[in-house]
Length: 179
Image 1 (cartoon, one colour):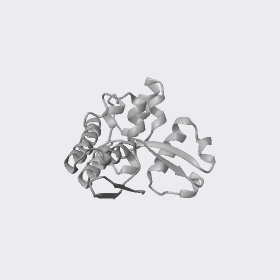
Image 2: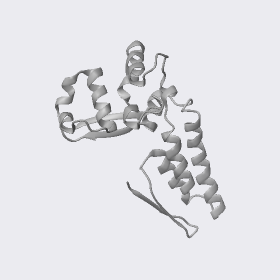
Image 3: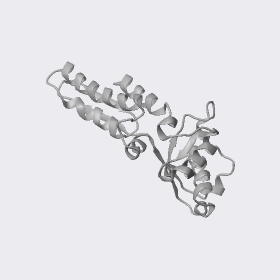
Image 4: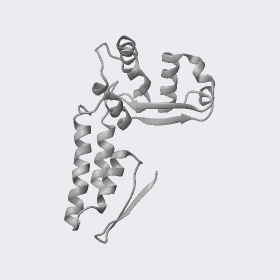
């Protein structure tokens, strides 16, 4: 995890080890704003609050692609999927689901790139069971619903914003608390 350090004009240095992400970069860039420590913190708080609003509303003001870009993570499986055996990790769950959806032949190569979101369902399930490949959100509605219902173990209709996990809120919340 990279360390972000900003030395502002107010003789303070802020250094945190947090994931690199567009909202976090925007927060840190605002540490240089203002002509006093109070106005600097107000500028930082404004950006942080805007991003918390995005999370709290589950990105209702964003289109699906923008929301997925904010809440998804990219994982790479360096070896062959078969070499990992029965390990439980989000990238393997995502790879298996990609294989089900797109065809198992894609799992035969090394270096599989998995872009995923962590869903809030099935409720109570481990994170590894809640990994959803983002490519499914580009599928035709009937196909999308089939796979989301299967993976989320539900019979109800499912939309992207219905499955947004609390993980983004927790992550931004911890950054805001650290700031």
